[in-house]
Amino acid sequence: MGTTQSARGQQRVFTVQEVDNLIPTLSSKVGDLLIDRSEIERLVAELSEELGHEPKSLQPDSSDSSDVAAMKRDLRQRMSSYEQGWNEIEAMGAFVKDPRIGLLDFYGNIEGRLVWLCWRYGEDSLGYYHELNAGYAGRRTLGRRERALLLN
Image (cartoon, rainbow, N blue to C red; front, side, top):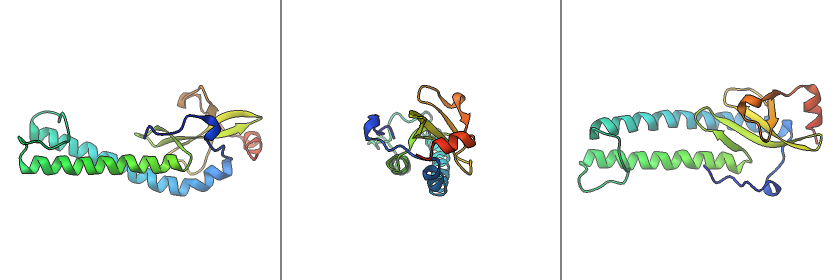
């Protein structure tokens, strides 16, 4: 994550239907990533307990037991896979706003205004948008009028 392009001219502007068409794939991928995150958090806690403190690094060192070194390698691999999963979602045109809850935004256009089309894991379809400078709290329902305006 964090590699999303910020140059708006290079980003795709989506319609509601285009985002809705992605939701089955996004739901599956994001659901898997949320499970992966929980597992990573559990393994970090397990490693911390084994070490007696939070790990300063996941790079095995000479003072690590073979079990600790294996745990660190496993965690590094899982974290790399987790990040790659979010990168794949970003490659679909999404902006990952909060990976802890599966919150994604897509560029949309209402009456010539660039807006964020906002989807959160668990929602069956795209139902919200917000201005570019507004966050999650600024989400507005996509009514019939806005849906019609987004069919550009």
